[in-house]
Picture 1 (spheres, helix red, strand yellow):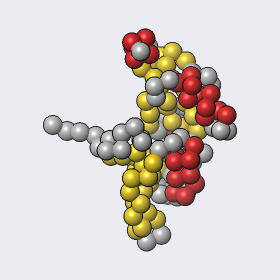
Picture 2 (spheres, rainbow, N blue to C red):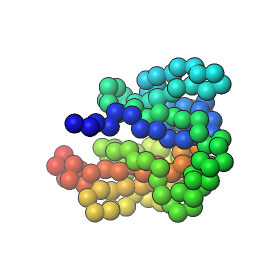
Picture 3 (cartoon, helix red, strand yellow):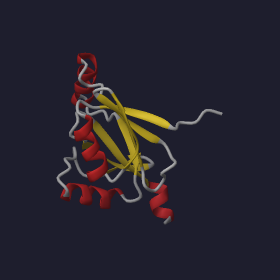
Picture 4 (cartoon, rainbow, N blue to C red):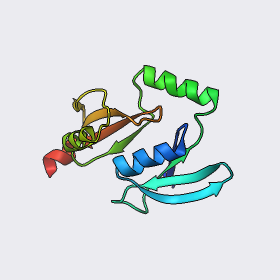
Length: 136
């Protein structure tokens, strides 16, 4: 059986990304291992501290990665997605903290979602399962 336990996102500045993902989104640092001029830095949801880790990779200093990020943003394509319990409440909370969204939450089939700018060159989709909202 294959499991997803680690995924990654490319950023130009790990310190800035850590501040956004921890201080704004609310993740917590799981691993922070110095590796020369960069770090092996992962964050997790405090709701699932042993769940899937997001590796904050210092990759977008490379021209090819930066070009790919720009291409994704230009087309409005999120790099990754995070599930939330209440997309409208998260949209309101994060907007109050200055997070820039591409628009308000919208119903998209089985999910209600909104896309945000992570301030590090990436778009991130936040989504709520509609079935979970109606079952609650």
